[in-house]
Image 1 (tube, protein in one colour):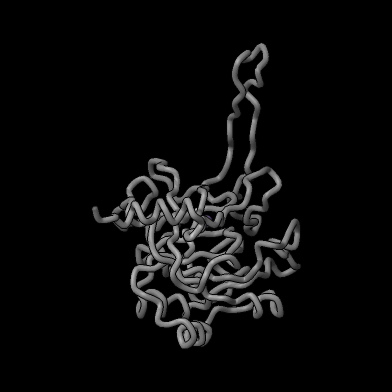
Image 2: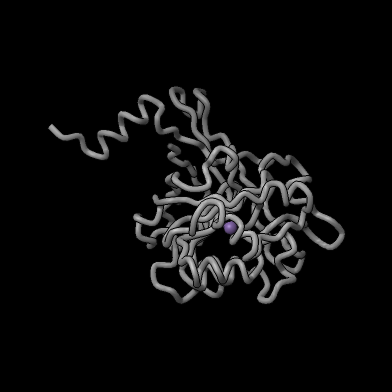
Length: 258
Ligand code: MN
Protein backbone atom coordinates (compact mmCIF):
# COMPACT_ATOMS: atom_id res chain seq x y z
CA UNK A 1 0.00 0.00 0.00
CA UNK A 2 1.46 3.35 -0.97
CA UNK A 3 1.75 6.14 1.59
CA UNK A 4 0.06 9.40 0.77
CA UNK A 5 1.57 12.86 1.27
CA UNK A 6 -0.81 13.58 4.13
CA UNK A 7 -0.02 10.28 5.84
CA UNK A 8 3.66 11.18 5.56
CA UNK A 9 2.97 14.62 7.01
CA UNK A 10 1.06 13.15 9.95
CA UNK A 11 3.98 10.81 10.63
CA UNK A 12 6.55 13.61 10.27
CA UNK A 13 4.58 15.82 12.70
CA UNK A 14 4.31 12.96 15.22
CA UNK A 15 8.03 12.17 14.98
CA UNK A 16 9.14 15.81 15.00
CA UNK A 17 10.69 15.58 11.52
CA UNK A 18 8.31 18.45 10.66
CA UNK A 19 8.00 21.05 13.42
CA UNK A 20 5.15 23.49 14.04
CA UNK A 21 6.41 27.00 14.89
CA UNK A 22 3.99 29.49 16.45
CA UNK A 23 4.49 32.98 14.96
CA UNK A 24 1.82 34.60 17.17
CA UNK A 25 2.06 37.03 20.09
CA UNK A 26 -0.25 36.50 23.06
CA UNK A 27 -3.21 38.88 22.74
CA UNK A 28 -3.64 40.90 25.93
CA UNK A 29 -4.67 44.47 26.82
CA UNK A 30 -1.03 45.57 27.04
CA UNK A 31 -0.08 44.59 23.50
CA UNK A 32 0.76 47.83 21.63
CA UNK A 33 -1.51 48.99 18.83
CA UNK A 34 -0.65 51.46 16.09
CA UNK A 35 -1.05 55.12 17.06
CA UNK A 36 -2.08 57.47 14.26
CA UNK A 37 -1.77 61.26 14.19
CA UNK A 38 -4.48 62.71 16.51
CA UNK A 39 -6.74 63.98 13.69
CA UNK A 40 -7.49 60.36 12.67
CA UNK A 41 -9.64 57.64 14.26
CA UNK A 42 -7.70 55.35 16.56
CA UNK A 43 -7.26 51.60 16.84
CA UNK A 44 -8.81 50.09 20.01
CA UNK A 45 -6.69 47.90 22.21
CA UNK A 46 -7.75 44.36 23.09
CA UNK A 47 -10.20 44.27 26.00
CA UNK A 48 -11.65 41.26 27.84
CA UNK A 49 -14.73 41.48 30.10
CA UNK A 50 -15.70 38.58 32.32
CA UNK A 51 -19.30 37.41 31.77
CA UNK A 52 -19.22 34.67 34.39
CA UNK A 53 -16.63 32.60 36.22
CA UNK A 54 -18.37 29.53 37.76
CA UNK A 55 -20.45 31.89 39.89
CA UNK A 56 -24.01 33.22 40.18
CA UNK A 57 -23.70 34.63 36.64
CA UNK A 58 -23.08 31.10 35.34
CA UNK A 59 -22.43 28.43 37.96
CA UNK A 60 -20.80 25.84 35.69
CA UNK A 61 -19.02 27.98 33.14
CA UNK A 62 -16.56 30.80 32.55
CA UNK A 63 -16.47 33.07 29.51
CA UNK A 64 -15.61 36.59 28.31
CA UNK A 65 -16.81 39.30 25.99
CA UNK A 66 -14.04 40.66 23.80
CA UNK A 67 -13.58 44.15 22.33
CA UNK A 68 -10.87 44.78 19.79
CA UNK A 69 -9.92 46.40 16.52
CA UNK A 70 -9.55 44.11 13.49
CA UNK A 71 -5.90 45.19 13.40
CA UNK A 72 -4.96 44.31 16.99
CA UNK A 73 -2.10 41.99 17.95
CA UNK A 74 -0.77 39.47 15.44
CA UNK A 75 -3.16 40.12 12.57
CA UNK A 76 -4.04 39.75 8.89
CA UNK A 77 -4.65 42.65 6.46
CA UNK A 78 -7.18 42.14 3.64
CA UNK A 79 -7.09 44.27 0.44
CA UNK A 80 -10.17 46.21 1.63
CA UNK A 81 -8.04 47.64 4.45
CA UNK A 82 -6.57 50.21 2.03
CA UNK A 83 -8.22 52.67 -0.36
CA UNK A 84 -6.19 51.18 -3.23
CA UNK A 85 -7.96 47.82 -2.73
CA UNK A 86 -11.44 49.09 -1.93
CA UNK A 87 -13.02 48.08 -5.25
CA UNK A 88 -11.29 44.74 -5.78
CA UNK A 89 -13.41 41.56 -5.78
CA UNK A 90 -13.12 39.25 -2.74
CA UNK A 91 -11.27 41.96 -0.84
CA UNK A 92 -12.59 41.22 2.68
CA UNK A 93 -11.60 38.41 5.06
CA UNK A 94 -14.91 36.56 4.56
CA UNK A 95 -14.54 36.58 0.75
CA UNK A 96 -10.85 35.73 0.32
CA UNK A 97 -10.49 32.19 -1.11
CA UNK A 98 -9.39 29.90 1.72
CA UNK A 99 -6.52 28.43 -0.37
CA UNK A 100 -4.66 31.68 0.26
CA UNK A 101 -4.37 30.90 3.97
CA UNK A 102 -1.83 28.09 3.57
CA UNK A 103 1.25 28.18 1.36
CA UNK A 104 5.01 28.49 0.95
CA UNK A 105 6.88 31.17 2.85
CA UNK A 106 10.21 32.93 2.26
CA UNK A 107 11.97 34.74 5.11
CA UNK A 108 14.31 37.64 4.32
CA UNK A 109 16.69 38.12 7.24
CA UNK A 110 17.04 41.85 8.01
CA UNK A 111 17.86 41.30 11.70
CA UNK A 112 21.44 42.61 11.53
CA UNK A 113 20.37 45.74 9.66
CA UNK A 114 17.45 46.40 12.00
CA UNK A 115 19.68 45.94 15.05
CA UNK A 116 21.95 48.71 13.75
CA UNK A 117 19.26 51.06 12.41
CA UNK A 118 15.68 51.47 13.73
CA UNK A 119 14.70 52.82 10.29
CA UNK A 120 16.31 49.96 8.36
CA UNK A 121 14.86 49.69 4.86
CA UNK A 122 14.14 46.51 2.91
CA UNK A 123 15.34 47.56 -0.57
CA UNK A 124 15.62 45.74 -3.91
CA UNK A 125 19.35 45.35 -3.13
CA UNK A 126 18.54 43.53 0.13
CA UNK A 127 16.16 41.24 -1.78
CA UNK A 128 18.83 40.62 -4.44
CA UNK A 129 21.37 39.66 -1.75
CA UNK A 130 18.82 37.26 -0.22
CA UNK A 131 18.11 35.65 -3.61
CA UNK A 132 21.82 35.33 -4.46
CA UNK A 133 22.19 33.22 -1.32
CA UNK A 134 18.88 31.35 -1.14
CA UNK A 135 17.46 31.34 -4.67
CA UNK A 136 14.74 33.31 -6.42
CA UNK A 137 11.52 33.94 -4.47
CA UNK A 138 8.95 31.61 -6.09
CA UNK A 139 5.64 33.04 -7.36
CA UNK A 140 2.64 33.12 -5.02
CA UNK A 141 4.74 32.85 -1.84
CA UNK A 142 4.36 34.67 1.43
CA UNK A 143 7.42 36.86 2.08
CA UNK A 144 8.27 37.74 5.67
CA UNK A 145 10.71 40.44 6.75
CA UNK A 146 12.65 39.19 9.78
CA UNK A 147 13.91 42.02 11.99
CA UNK A 148 13.78 40.45 15.51
CA UNK A 149 11.64 43.52 16.35
CA UNK A 150 9.22 41.12 18.10
CA UNK A 151 11.66 40.79 21.02
CA UNK A 152 11.01 44.46 21.92
CA UNK A 153 8.62 45.19 24.79
CA UNK A 154 6.56 48.21 25.86
CA UNK A 155 7.43 51.62 24.41
CA UNK A 156 10.42 50.23 22.50
CA UNK A 157 8.01 48.31 20.23
CA UNK A 158 6.30 51.34 18.66
CA UNK A 159 9.50 53.34 19.29
CA UNK A 160 7.60 56.64 19.21
CA UNK A 161 9.85 59.73 18.87
CA UNK A 162 8.96 63.41 18.56
CA UNK A 163 8.58 62.98 14.79
CA UNK A 164 6.55 59.77 15.00
CA UNK A 165 7.30 56.05 15.20
CA UNK A 166 10.60 54.57 14.01
CA UNK A 167 10.69 50.93 12.93
CA UNK A 168 12.05 49.04 9.91
CA UNK A 169 10.07 48.39 6.72
CA UNK A 170 10.14 48.09 2.94
CA UNK A 171 10.75 50.87 0.41
CA UNK A 172 8.21 51.49 -2.37
CA UNK A 173 10.71 50.01 -4.86
CA UNK A 174 11.09 46.80 -2.84
CA UNK A 175 7.33 46.29 -2.61
CA UNK A 176 6.90 46.98 -6.35
CA UNK A 177 9.64 44.44 -7.10
CA UNK A 178 7.97 41.76 -4.93
CA UNK A 179 4.62 42.35 -6.66
CA UNK A 180 5.74 42.96 -10.26
CA UNK A 181 8.74 40.65 -10.53
CA UNK A 182 7.89 37.92 -7.98
CA UNK A 183 4.08 38.05 -7.84
CA UNK A 184 4.08 37.31 -4.11
CA UNK A 185 0.93 36.33 -2.25
CA UNK A 186 1.53 38.56 0.74
CA UNK A 187 4.07 40.30 2.92
CA UNK A 188 4.54 40.05 6.67
CA UNK A 189 6.53 41.83 9.37
CA UNK A 190 7.35 41.70 13.07
CA UNK A 191 6.42 45.36 13.54
CA UNK A 192 2.98 46.90 14.12
CA UNK A 193 2.44 47.47 10.37
CA UNK A 194 3.68 46.14 7.03
CA UNK A 195 5.15 49.61 6.49
CA UNK A 196 8.09 51.27 8.20
CA UNK A 197 7.36 53.50 11.19
CA UNK A 198 8.24 56.48 8.99
CA UNK A 199 6.29 55.01 6.04
CA UNK A 200 4.12 58.14 5.76
CA UNK A 201 7.09 59.95 4.21
CA UNK A 202 7.47 57.71 1.15
CA UNK A 203 5.79 58.34 -2.19
CA UNK A 204 3.14 56.99 -2.05
CA UNK A 205 2.69 57.15 1.73
CA UNK A 206 2.60 53.67 3.34
CA UNK A 207 3.77 51.96 0.13
CA UNK A 208 3.39 48.38 1.43
CA UNK A 209 -0.27 48.96 2.28
CA UNK A 210 -0.91 50.98 -0.89
CA UNK A 211 0.73 48.66 -3.41
CA UNK A 212 0.07 45.27 -1.79
CA UNK A 213 -3.63 45.82 -1.23
CA UNK A 214 -4.04 47.60 -4.58
CA UNK A 215 -2.69 44.43 -6.21
CA UNK A 216 -4.98 42.13 -4.18
CA UNK A 217 -2.13 40.93 -1.94
CA UNK A 218 -2.32 40.36 1.81
CA UNK A 219 -0.46 41.55 4.90
CA UNK A 220 0.58 40.04 8.23
CA UNK A 221 1.84 42.10 11.15
CA UNK A 222 3.10 41.68 14.72
CA UNK A 223 4.60 38.28 13.90
CA UNK A 224 7.21 36.65 16.17
CA UNK A 225 9.63 33.71 16.16
CA UNK A 226 10.73 34.40 12.58
CA UNK A 227 14.25 33.46 13.72
CA UNK A 228 12.97 29.88 13.94
CA UNK A 229 12.06 29.72 10.23
CA UNK A 230 14.38 28.72 7.37
CA UNK A 231 14.89 31.22 4.49
CA UNK A 232 12.84 28.90 2.24
CA UNK A 233 11.04 25.58 2.53
CA UNK A 234 8.49 26.25 5.28
CA UNK A 235 4.69 26.34 4.89
CA UNK A 236 2.73 29.22 6.43
CA UNK A 237 -0.75 28.71 7.94
CA UNK A 238 -2.62 31.99 8.45
CA UNK A 239 -6.46 31.88 8.30
CA UNK A 240 -8.10 35.09 9.58
CA UNK A 241 -11.53 35.09 11.26
CA UNK A 242 -14.42 35.01 8.78
CA UNK A 243 -15.90 38.42 9.60
CA UNK A 244 -18.42 39.78 7.09
CA UNK A 245 -16.89 42.80 5.33
CA UNK A 246 -13.88 42.51 7.66
CA UNK A 247 -10.73 44.38 6.60
CA UNK A 248 -8.51 42.14 8.71
CA UNK A 249 -8.47 40.10 11.88
CA UNK A 250 -6.31 38.85 14.70
CA UNK A 251 -5.30 35.24 14.06
CA UNK A 252 -3.01 32.41 15.06
CA UNK A 253 -0.15 32.26 12.55
CA UNK A 254 1.89 29.06 12.37
CA UNK A 255 4.50 27.53 10.11
CA UNK A 256 5.36 23.95 9.26
CA UNK A 257 9.14 23.75 9.30
CA UNK A 258 11.21 20.87 7.92
MN1 MN B 1 -3.25 45.93 9.85
